[in-house]
Amino acid sequence: MLKIAVLVSGRGSNLQAIIDAIESGNINGKIEVVISNKNDAYALERARKHNIEGVFIEPLSYKSKEDYDRAIIKILEDKNIELVCLAGFMRILTPYFVNKYRGRIMNIHPSLLPAFPGLEVQKKALDYGVKFTGATVHFVDDGVDSGPIIIQSVVPVLDIDTSETLSERILKEEHRIYPEAIKLFAEGRISVKGRRAFIKHN
Image (cartoon, rainbow, N blue to C red; front, side):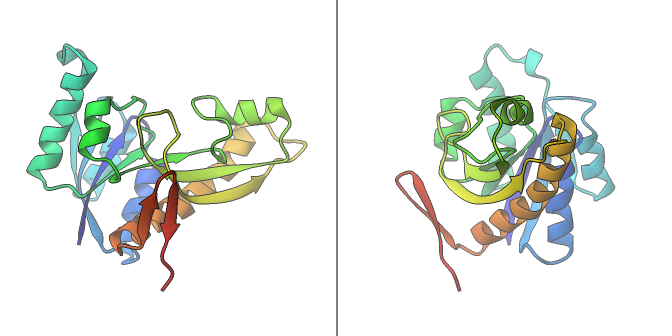
């Protein structure tokens, strides 16, 4: 059974999607801990409702970003975490963290990477005038939203779309493909060669 940690900053809708997939038996794994850099993150409440340990770590209590990441890693190591999932975690991990868990950190991003990395993604897509955007699950590397891509899902951009309506439709795809990527990882079906992630089909 795969031991998972989820790092969050906000409402945790992707966390909920992962929890639902585990509880339904779709993922052979267990969320051992949910860690947040925000004390009022609703994601922590979601964790508690499902009897999952929720931990708030105050960033201001640490002198540097690396010290903060070391505090998270201490918890991960104590719980023998095998996969770290970022679900709306609004901090960039330090190289120390990435190197410690390289190939074992996943993130979900609301665009078809490498298009529109970073923040305000749906606004960028609308401003650019793309006809399609979507969601990407990828491994985290040293860059921003630049790691090997595991799964993508395409969402058409409608003429009447706003950032809000587009975000809503992309989010539905996020909730579908993030658990799927975790399932593939749990089954040992993902391999990475250079920039590319390959999925072994049964």
